[in-house]
Image (tube, rainbow, N blue to C red; front, side, top):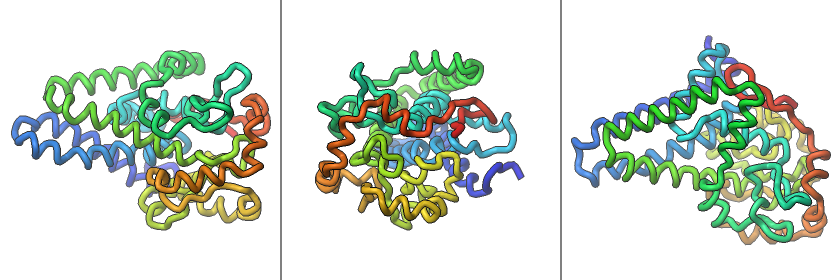
Length: 320
């Protein structure tokens, strides 16, 4: 048995490896099909990219799938090609997100959570959805992230993943420049846009500083069955190291505190929650949220459990 937590992790693993194989097959066989037929693969490629970031890359950060450290590190290298960035960078930013939990800007005007939906907002409000989602992919602090990763002892893994990205992209470019320009690059950009939409509505309406209401949740059974309980996002923030199969149990164990919290429960999956943006905005305008708008990022960090970012088992992990 190679799985550390559950054989069910074989599903996202197989999907992301299939994504990698599909990309190289499309590039290698691009010239054998008319352009219009090739472009028909775009929705599938976009879905696989979105699924990768939403489910596979995310769950792997917190609960690396394999018992073998070598397999964990190898998977990180391969999946970096899929997402177009070193996965250790994704992990680093994501764990800062858990540490500072979508904080508001502090006295210096900056958030400590690099993915905070308040980073580009004004007067303690969320940044607009459009600018956050469509400009967000261009606002990465790669050099700052790489520096911090190296300081924490992750330079070798980072180097391997950067090399994998460069070699993978270079190989795809050699196989078919048209594939890269007309399919790969648009899918990478739109895929990251979808990831930003997902993150935005997983936190839009949440109250920084309240551990039981700093995120949103969506409890649709089909969505959670297909996407590894990603709808239980508030529960995930409360216990990030719990395997995705146990998130519904976390909801049951903390049901009393969760029911008491004045929090946002979505009627649609986060990627579609723009449909109810107005309702959420009205709920965010409640008095408790206006009071929390004056809480600084430093105060928020003290109220939250501050996990330690460590590198173990082939992945960056969070230690509560």
